[in-house]
Amino acid sequence: MVNRIVVGAHYGLRDWLAQRITAVIMAVYSVILAVVLLTGTPISYAVWKDLFSQGWMRVATLLFAASLAWHMWVGVRDILMDYVKPTGLRLALQTVTLLTIAAYLGWTVQILWR
Amino acid sequence: MNAVIKKNRPKFLSLPALLFQIRLPLPGWVSILHRASGALLFLAMVWLLFLLDRSLASERDFEFVRRYAGLPLVKLSLLVLIWAYCHHFCAGIRYLFLDLDRGVDKPAARATSYAVLGASLALTAYFGMKLW
View 1 (cartoon, each protein chain N blue to C red):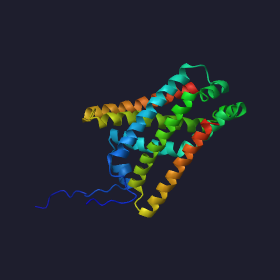
View 2: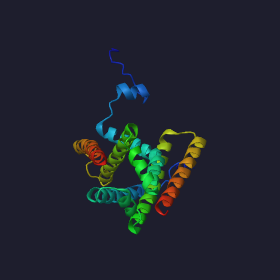
View 3: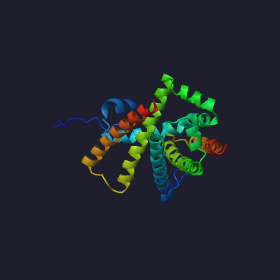
View 4: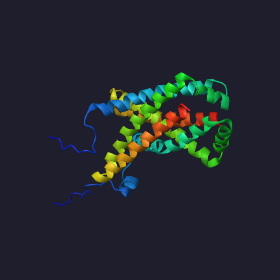
């Protein structure tokens, strides 16, 4: 049997696939946002504020943030698995990573629905 | 009889070896930069969220962000992050195609590596110009 450790990968297709699907979601959002920002009127506070008060923009940005959170988790975990070998230290860093990502996500929601 | 050249084996991936003995192939550069840019974006997210937060808070805060982003060091940092995003984006698309078994042979892999490095620098220059 394969030697499975608790701070390893999740031994399946799910994270690998999630990283790619979230990447595509973020890429689509990025292109749309770039087009909106570059073809619209020059960004003043009113334009900027108005853009982020639209319902579709808030939901799209939330989807982007959720995708980013998942994507970051898989990516950072891969980096930790490659460079941090002691199990305890890796577990601690993974925990810090998850807390950081949760905080990022919470802050994003706060910024969007203020 | 023992005229066989003694090869210095095995080689280990020590830092000096990485710096002076082993030449990373071009796709290798794209790969390590993809990882480095991803890590950088993860760490910088707290700062980017701060900027987004302030820019949407009020007219005065928006003006603060505008002036803040004009400071040379801030501008440079933002350019680095824009490059990181563009590189991560372009290299990521390359990996999606590699996952689909497209562009796997050596000439194609080299060509798309050049394309990724060039495109991300060009996009960075373009967005940099648009921002300032």
